[in-house]
Length: 166
Image 1: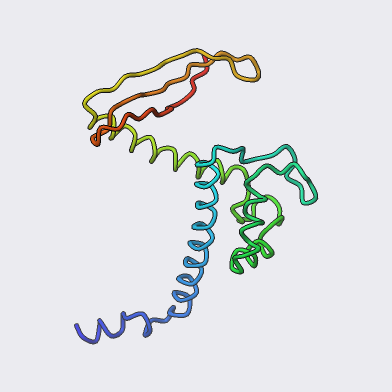
Image 2: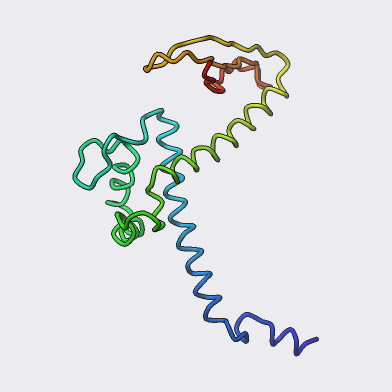
């Protein structure tokens, strides 16, 4: 058993260099994702627009997501090097700057927030729903779902849940 344990340890394996390389790469991408998700959480908390009309390199209408990452990279050397290496490499290359990735992270974060809100509502003694029909910018009618409840601390909270097109 001791011989088997010694042979299976990380440093005595044939692929130990590959393991170290993989662990280093996992750490690298975790650091990138931490910065990306922090930026998404900040923009969501502020309630500002993520994407712009033209996200080209010289565009002045990029929205807030890409300029926020660029601003952060001025003070974060790791992110600066990452953006220099992976920005604008084209479709099919991972850089975590595309709108699909951003939308996917927003969706994942929203699922967690929604689960937290639902848990708070389940623990609340009193709650009510507010459902209203409003037209959006393109004149499409949609239902607005809002929940108001009294939290366990006695604080009245009102949470927007979602829009549903009619």
